[in-house]
Length: 506
Image 1 (cartoon, helix red, strand yellow):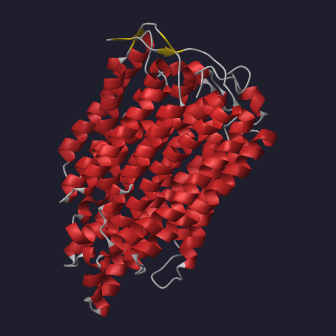
Image 2 (cartoon, rainbow, N blue to C red; image 1 turned 90 degrees about the horizontal axis):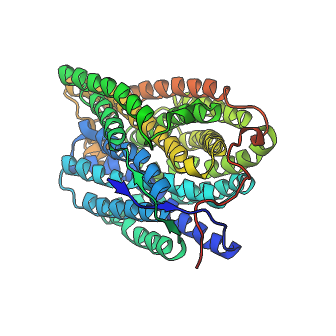
Image 3 (cartoon, rainbow, N blue to C red; image 1 turned 30 degrees about the vertical axis):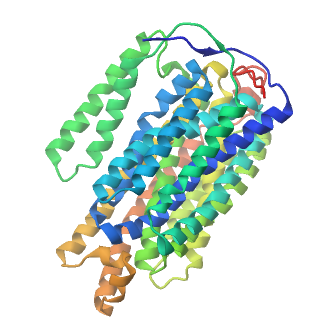
């Protein structure tokens, strides 16, 4: 199929127009980041009401699966058709999926609707970052990225409070319904203030590349979730591996490949992409496997459990703002190394948390992890964007988000397997770990049974945290390969800040 859309080059119409676009992107960022924090807060209660703790990891893996496989496709479409139509479509799909999640009656239904929700989420953040790369030069982008991280911090603070309040006093279903007004507001702002001139020119969508890449990733992730059926898992792994050379062959021969492979030969892009994969593994692991410990092992309420996660939401934007300024002086390597070290220390400290620990301890630890995420994330995304011009910025930005998502999906799946093993051990001992996550059932447990369940759940989660320590150590080693010189030596994009994406007007 031939597409007839490519955005022409142009200049920013004025400072006021750029600010309006930035506000629109703020709203979109808040939308996705709020969803992440409220869902993580609500899930223990969801399990307590509808059961299905054995499918716990699937609620997150399903979302990450579709949001991962669609990211490169969204990035390429944004380069071909312009940022606006693809961005609006992704938000609309996310909104429909969110409303459907709120209607779920079983864990299986919730997982299915999370697949749809993730299908839309795959385009929101990468295109958001792409537009930022279009509008701001590197010097301003390093600062504005810190401001955007503040949005994650604000939503991280509000999300647990909103999610916990709705879960305890209204219904967990409203943690999904709350997305509706934000989706509408974001769509209206983008529709009104982001305008692109489109030049009619033929383009060819790389369908074979899209199908083989999506198929390979989907088979890999599904294989990770079918460990109870070894034969099926082997078949899925074989398909995942077999599709990789087909994808590479297609990308080398395609006139307009979905992912230009030569880009990853550039040091800044290749290292940033690999680092993003490990970052995603650690990031989604923290948000997925810390609430069960705080609520199930330590006995905290959903609201308190959510506020524990808010520690990283406060420190992340601080580290992002500092890291953005630091890399302008020292280059990309040093702040990324600092982030990796902080992540290693943070996950190691989680092993010190016990059922008797004060809740301030996990709160402080998430603060340390947030610092690590902030330094590491801002460095890798800016390093990759600085290595290309506009015509490849959508692909490179999407590749960064893609690697983070696939790392998170693989990480949640692998960690979920460790977690499930502990849950199955509880079942073998005639214990039901679901009882720990339902306040009414927990209150009826005897002291001995409560202690046994807490020990089993804590042991399972500590095994998961050890895995994350190893991931953080490897991420630190990867950061050492980033270019160490001034950012200007990395840039291959021409004059920083030149907007070759769109002519923006009111």
